[in-house]
Length: 442
Image (cartoon, rainbow, N blue to C red):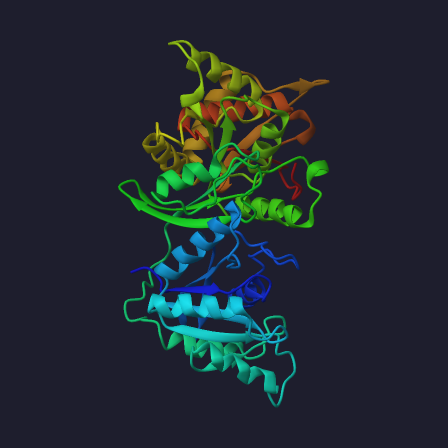
């Protein structure tokens, strides 16, 4: 059974994201003194009194008429509809506003239990008189808190948990495959996840940079259980000027680090760019299973040779990660999205593959017999044995007589022999070189 869902809602700049970060115990939502910074729903696990529920941070609800505000109201309503309980956050210093009353009325119409958190009560002791004004919202009991210092959050969580059903909590280990969808701005990352989810969960607009946070979405289908993370487009560092956008890029990099598979999206109408190689390079450096997904394939004029030509060009462009499979998709029409799920499962299994020491050394004997190890000034490289020391990514250690003789080209040859024998498609491979009796690595 899925965890209970609790949505954090309120007008802009009342401290929703600060409270969200405090309750989940990590800095997952972007916090900045600019109204409207949180545009999409953010998900995080909150643990309290041996129970776990899913906390959802939402964008500030405003009644403006522009497209972005319409999107934000829609996102907040989706979170409200999915939640078992709602935390409404208001600002003590600002007092009761007309917007607060509008939001309270909307929440009461939802029929969901609402817990009212009056934020920015930073002093401990007798509550200020202004606190009692918020009873006028008609939401019943209120809870004074300080999202910055954490005061009052225990009582708030106690009240929330009273409204949640934990009887069918799933205590099994989470076996979901975490997938980060990364790429330059405006290549269709959000559109892909919207197609997969069957709902407009992400904000999709022609304006580059509309995704500012890394958004987690659970997907269960015939291929298995997945968590897709839609990330902000990664740009060149020189172009990351605005503070909010800088935090977004850091969040995207963090999403790559906590994922098992990275789907690197390329815009078929633009082709390969230098920034694509930087985005892919970060996933490669982190040792993640990788897939190169060429999006907007439906918008390309093509004949029966176009795909082969593009594939060869991309293999040359991504020569540093030639192990990554290439798939041509359309997030708009859903073309080959089913095949993408199959690839995700496959490369994830390859990233976790373990090879026995006996099989590795049989391969090593054949490889060194076929191509002699290099020598220098009468000294020849000897590889005594090889073993795998870890997975994600598969990492192999070779014990040798002299590290300086184990040239990069011969390491690449041994790696290629491992791939040829055991597959390891879609995952980087790490080689560690040690001199026998030497604890150092190379």
